[in-house]
Image 1: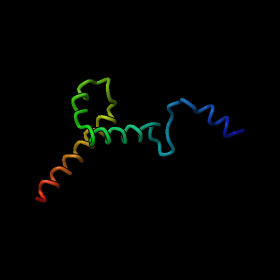
Image 2 (image 1 turned 180 degrees about the vertical axis):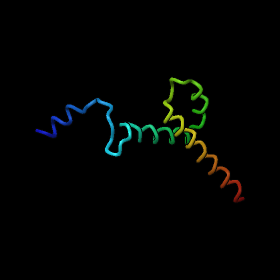
Image 3 (image 1 turned 135 degrees about the vertical axis):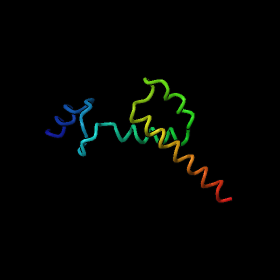
Length: 78
């Protein structure tokens, strides 16, 4: 019963995770890095302030940088 009440009370609320980071922050980082790596054109969408959060913008840039580093490593080995 305590578990059910805990789930019902915390469902849909923002809150914090056990490590103190806001809920959903890891999802933003993962999605941002994935978008940046596989779809770097999203950088142009970041000019609109309402499309991505600041955390996701940083993750997209990180994904783009990782993609560029793979490109440099691939072409420097030939």
